Image 1 (spheres, rainbow, N blue to C red):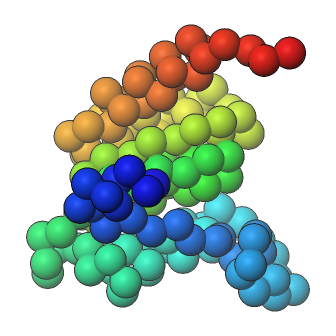
Image 2: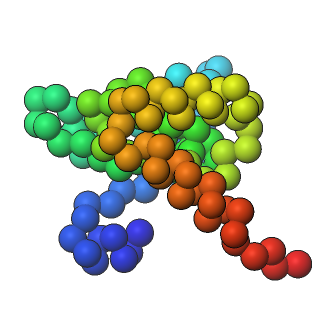
Length: 127
């Protein structure tokens, strides 16, 4: 993140509701809650959307990776591309559905997904 910021990009790291330093209300947590939290952040803080023409590259790890995919699939007007790292909880069917949806709606989605997969495969194990 510091390298991207140093290169002049606006970079944000947010805590999903219920994680990190965010509030932890007693509610039913599900993927829609986090998807909508991320979409609202992109609109209200990052200024993304059809009105501004601004779109973001959204990346996440674990559940954040799923949220990146879900936001990109549901709101292509907010996202230029997505990267999902270590999103192991997704089933193969859901992953393929999201990748196909993103490939149709986002310019860089398929390329980023393949790059992430190759990067994770080639990373050496430190046992």
